[in-house]
Image (tube, rainbow, N blue to C red; front, side, top):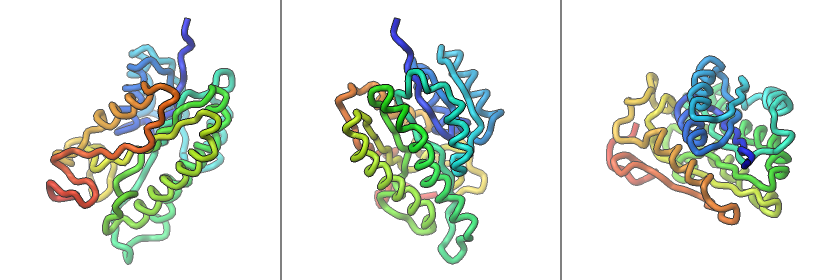
Length: 248
């Protein structure tokens, strides 16, 4: 009987993280789900379990190093290791530089960049134990084409890209693969320039399910194949300097 492999998904309570969890559950993976909202995550976990996945959840603030460390120590990865990690947790609000507060800057960088580092650090030995796994980083076109009013977010996502490139160099010999996704606008509850963001507020944008479909595909690739970067956008939305409609 084939041993079911486990994947950790951060920011798994809604949006892209929820969609990724459901897609991987459908593909036959067991899951560890981390997010700050335990109640919402329980709903996602139940939906994944209905697809046959064994699911463990933990309320984790990835921007808090001790929160990540405690969750990793309590997780059930020690026996078989991890087949993969999806670094999805993120945050950001668009403001001009002169209006950016120190607290907002720190929160954005702590969640998108520091959080990715804390989670990676906690998972590396478990990926190696599994004989090499897949790390998927959910970045943004803001890391490729910085936009006005997004200094903190663009800086954090650019830093995340550099972090993952460094990890690639260090972990390649252990068989660990790294894929980074750079989606354009995605129709989720991610705030960005919206005060009331929710699915349906970004017409023409990518859906969370479309991004999750790419993540699921990456996990089907042979272990000797590394899809290093994926740039993706809806043709009826924007991606970096390529505009098809008014950006929001």
